[in-house]
Figure 1: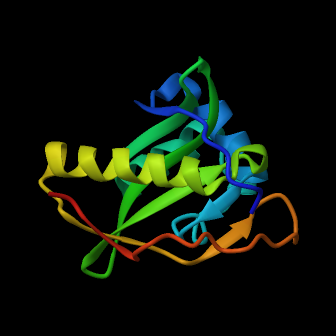
Figure 2 (figure 1 turned 180 degrees about the horizontal axis):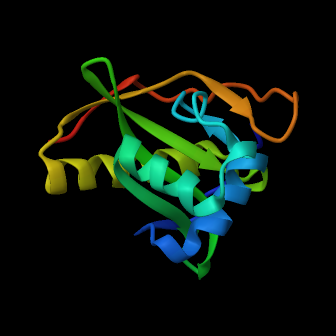
Length: 149
């Protein structure tokens, strides 16, 4: 992980017209969670891939910079595994900062509570780089479970 850097971000609901960007990002970004492991990126068209992500998730939001709201630097989603809900992230390596992930996690947790009534959300420690075999250190998030008040 890079040195800590405060970068203000915002989450925006993903739209179908962004499927090409989401598909490409999923092939070259850092992934936190295990929501992409069963999807085959090379065998699907971008729209079909994004439709499967939408089907697998409870909420799907793009991560953008506040000062450049048209640029997608990643995406976050809430997915269910077994009986628990998890935060999942896919973010470009240039923006792999704890502050960015924490902001996105906090915003997504609040959206989950407001939109779906989900208050118990876990964070996965599974992390990998979708672009090649390079490894990144896991983020040290304060807790593996987010309780939204």
